[in-house]
Length: 184
Image (cartoon, rainbow, N blue to C red):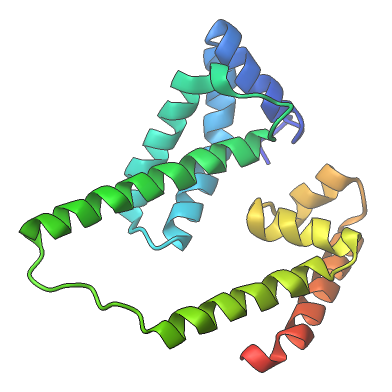
């Protein structure tokens, strides 16, 4: 976590950027979110260099469109990672258009119908297993894997001891493994 910044204050920082073009607020946002956005993009399959460029685009979008942020609709993290997801999708669409215009020498393989159905069934099973978790475990799981927060950051965010955070996460993962054992 960025030193001295509470998780809930990221929304206030975006509002400060929107209202006053506050460079210090943006610097704090950048310092916290830049490595997380880059990691998110790399985990999504982008190379380090492309993820770095896209991370810059994401945070430039935060600067340019901060006035569009509505704290009542989304958290700062959700809004910023939504921008990252959308820019990544746009980039992938553009690259496919380039490939379709003849720049590629071979076509990407089309997934078989069975593989598509199997992937959808797997996705539904995973969603059901996650939804069946107790709320306290689900909250820790979301923060750790979807918000990319460290155990210490989760401890501060939800106000429970570090050991409790680790226990809840371990229990959640054990229950998911058990529920999804057939998928392995």
